[in-house]
Length: 344
DNA sequence: TAGCGAATAT
DNA sequence: CATATTCGCT
Image (spheres, rainbow, N blue to C red):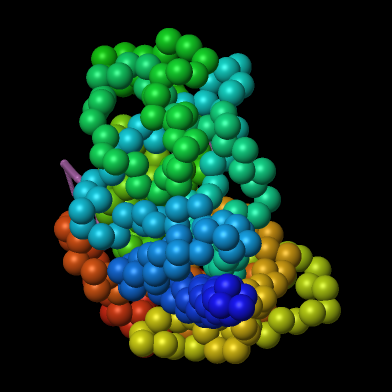
């Protein structure tokens, strides 16, 4: 008798807890958009979720969240994350092609990052070490890896020189200017840092190569490389429109301003309860470029795969190193670089 | 001079 | 294509 009752009670409890977790997860999904503005908030919710889950070991162990935290370096303690992110592709030494993709949580498909993660096989077994500088005069220093979701697979990566050998040295100075620079391969890690930098600096059009480079804190990375990459990035993000035959589904994405942030309407409105995938990232051809936010041009192209995520505001004062605090109100464009896109 | 962006070269 | 390098400008 009693037993049965308590059992039932337990079940009820479990159910309630499950619901609670669901609710929390939903909240988390919502605020995920503001990840950069409210990192702690996100963290808190995440932790709450995890705590709840721990309490219910018996629950359908759908461990969706590997280890959501530390997705961004935002908070100060992380400090400058120096790593050897660079990778010089040496045609022959195959092993690159790394894709580690899964920085941000996996459990929920955030429409934003989603575009980035997709097409990646996320095998990242090979991963590691982007940009080997066999020279290794460079910093052996490295902080705790940030966006590593290393749970038990942290094994790899972090061994900067395990890959194919190749004893290239940087022929920088002396040489006098004969040889071209090594082709730098922007690994996804590196690119992600780049993206982060962009976000924190206010978008591809306001961040300057130098700032970006400094923000990334990737050793060995030069201004020119960043500049070049930025250029490419801008070109890609410029107008993703038209290109795709626009399959009749003129997705009128509306963006609205929330607390100074541009955000796709569908992201925070819609009372979607669980399904997550509101914005069916349609034909996001954007690939890795898609993740980025750009300052909303005077009139945003209504139907484009190009969706902004967040324009920094940088409220969290980690160590600001020249972080440009910029409010992304539509009216902002005026002042400094008022020419984003020369509307042609 | 340094930095940026665009154009151009590889 | 994705980088690298050059060029013109501020």
